[in-house]
Length: 269
Image (cartoon, rainbow, N blue to C red):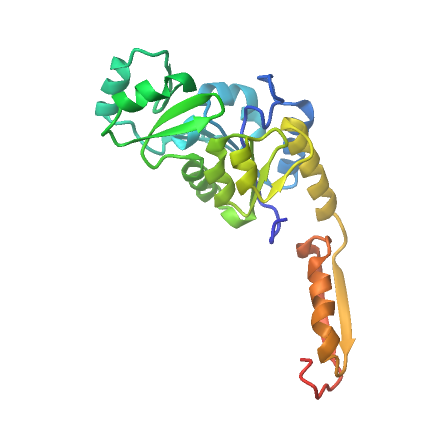
């Protein structure tokens, strides 16, 4: 769980906010994001999709949109788009010359993974990264990933990355999950992402996102608890007591532990 109060939610789109096989966000996930925003939590949608598509689908529930796998940042309040990185003219010419079906964005391009050997050979020597996302590969300017775009969005929103939870399903979500305070893979996530996530939801896609946010909301609404531990000459047992308190599941930002020493002489405190 987060070590601090939740201040932002970052969420991938396909197969994370949606269910596998669907292009539409699940209603419960959208409702959970709206509820979080009403509590003051910022919402950032982070996807390999284009900015126009994401604005249409989730613009009303997002404070910011990071499109094209981190290359574009859309500031919802100003309706302005910033290019986090640019594609070089050399890269654009190389993509124009490729003889494989490409999906072109403002900065990046994507193609079916079966064409990877041909594309990798054609782009050899260029300052680019090829990143896999399930059955697709993306061509990005070197150094562009979801973490780069998300951190730019959080900086613009004035939110510390340590207070952000990120949800994803694909290999390209790994940098984003590593960059924040708590990284969550949905149940249908690729094995590579599950391996780096702090947590894996029992539920798939948008249902997993909605269920996690519901659980966290319930935890955030629990009362603040003060645990008072009076002690005197308890050196042999005090550490075990404190370790047990740290190991329990009550949210860490909802309790404090006060050790009150009654004049120990054995090094308890």
